Amino acid sequence: MKRSFRLLNILLPLAAGAAVYVFFRSDTYIALVVRALLPGMENVGTLPGTAFLRNYACDMLWAWALCFACSWVLDLPAAGALCAAALGALMELLQLRGLMGGTFDLWDIILEALSAFCASLIIYLKRGKSNEKYL
Image 1 (cartoon, rainbow, N blue to C red):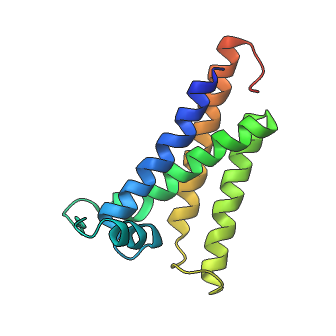
Image 2 (image 1 turned 30 degrees about the horizontal axis):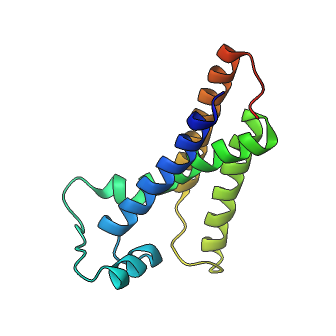
């Protein structure tokens, strides 16, 4: 599998997730830092129809990127999915216990696991076609 394919599937979801936080979630650290650096930056806020984007898209994108990164390091698509899903569940449990900012949401866990599974499926299929190791 080409390095550029792996890097794009790590970097683009991270950038897209950060953009969602900057433009749609003014209460995040990323948005606060960007607004401090670029004072004229406006927050789009709560446009109609953006609830899914604001509440779940970032987590799904970051689970996707983490799955690709872990799969690259561990050379096993299933391990990447398990790492991403486990880390997502751990973060939500930390929120539930009040040890981390944010609010617990079972849908976050479900959608992060689904995203990681889809990413690992793409890795598996892409790797199978090229008949090469992931590294």
